[in-house]
Image 1 (tube, rainbow, N blue to C red):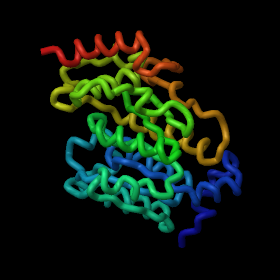
Image 2: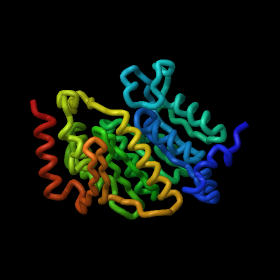
Image 3: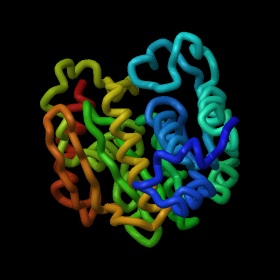
Image 4: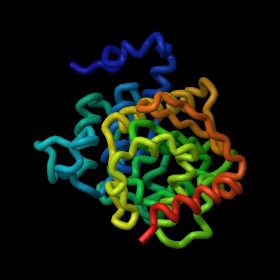
Length: 285
């Protein structure tokens, strides 16, 4: 027989019993139920959060096995959204889940974010247009929003808080039109130090024109841990959160940790130079 207090009793100590009940009633909206999105949701469910909005239109495929927590031979060709919902209810049968099996788009965005206390980005790296739209709506509605990128064997975290720098002001994608150029802006904003670059042993595996890149399971796990920790601090109003233009990047392979501060976001002169260099490398013929 499921009992909420028993199920999450081992959280107590790092959380008070009162804080656990606060988390129980918080709602988190997560876009994407594949790599990082699935891990985010499962981690937060084990933290005791009981209300979710989840959105993904895709199905699991064999090539997801290396990093996606919901990918098993038993779930291949099953909808990621329904597998995630089933997993969350298996952890906590009391979970309230708003499911968006067709993904998120302009017509259902407000429904997806309704009553959300926090938004977490689990969208595919190359899904830029809807990502811009979601972060913009979160900024308008005063909803804290986080994105954690699995880079190499590390994680880069950016948090966008109400009243602080917005996603659009930070990444400055308005002056570029192509998806590839926007993705490069997204990359240099997420990873101004490029800690992962030196150990990319096969650069041909990263192809922006074909919208594909290499990944590791370790990076996805790191994303979930770092994101859930900052989610806890935001939802409980406990502890300092490094809001944009501040960011964090930890690379486990190189044992390096960097704090970034880009007061002008990608509009800064050094970031503009990094963008031009990255563009010449990534989009070279």
